[in-house]
Amino acid sequence: MDKLRPHVHRASVMAMRLVDIADTIDLAAVESLWARHARTLAARGRLLSTSPKAMTFGVPPVELMLEPLSIEIGGSVVQAAAMARLYEFGVAALSIRVPADDLPWNDFSARVNAVDAALGIASGSPVWSTLLQKIMDIMQPALRRPSTEPLHEDYLLGLVQSLEGVGNTARLHDELDLVPLLAGETRPLSEQARQELLRQRFSYYTDDLAVLTWDRAFIFEPRDESDVVDILEVANAQLLEMRYYDELLDAELPRMYDLVEATHNVANPFAARRYADLARHLYTLVAEVTEITEKVDNALQVTEDVYLARVYASALELFRVPHVSKAVDRKLSIIRDSYSALYEEASSKRGELMELAIIVLIAVEIVIAVIRHV
Image 1 (cartoon, one colour):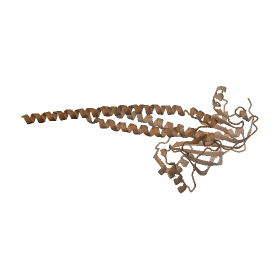
Image 2 (cartoon, helix red, strand yellow):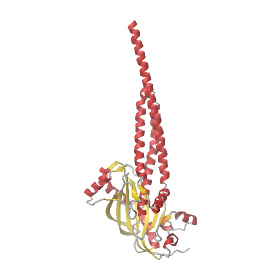
Image 3 (cartoon, one colour):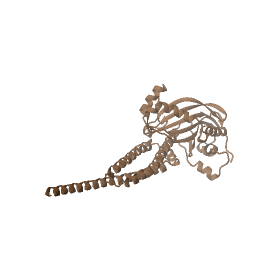
Image 4 (cartoon, one colour):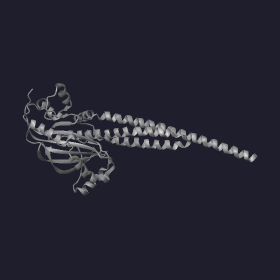
């Protein structure tokens, strides 16, 4: 069916790249370092339109306003705003906002896809690595155990503040053809694919709309700023960190099995020390991962805002954060069980060593007594 051809008056396209840069980040040190080197003040992130009693950051990230960028989008050079947010649990969330004002709807959709082509994963653009390196050069003292092979997540948002030519704002998803924007596809999709693509859509007022997909979102918010953007950033940051610890534990489990096997093969009464050392290593690993994952889980605290709570829960489910989190918990459980077994084994070996020591002492006493009677 033919769609209306609305006109976008005020809008932008935001490309996000979230990078795991360290185990943890000292945010107080970040504020101090940024003020010293960039000569501008850093700000703590906060939700703009939501009461702090309804939804707050667990530990507010630090916002860093970066210098504007000149980027080639669809054959034209445009000025784009850049920003970074640093989260305590080790994530740097970079964002580039490209203006998309005064465009017909189809051209706005094309602008979203052009930004993806210029800044998305497939583009191989050096813009992200350049921005990240500038931040890393300044923030190195604030990073605890910087990542050697950082993971990243990308997300793309079409943000509209003023839209003309839509008859029923309560049914924007029916009156706008969102498929090219959300799927990046120019060919028509099947009805089933369209329904699946538009399944995660939310409205609070009669004139706003948020539609979420795995790697893109469309947000229409005439009140200029939307906390949904922050929620999507946090959900992506949580996914990234859970992916990091899932891969960390994937690599750790085979090493753990090898160490346990090697320790079992040490057939001497002093193996208790080996068991105890390995058990301490596993306990430290579990404690560190548990501490950080708890910070990740509590990155955003939702209490009273039912609408944003629904959007947040849907984003977490859409990004499969609970699935990855359960995988991390399952692997931590395996390591905890191994720690308990090793601790018991170490205690057993110590008991065997004490028994051997007692036997040796008794034998020595017998030998001494025999010598005295000879």
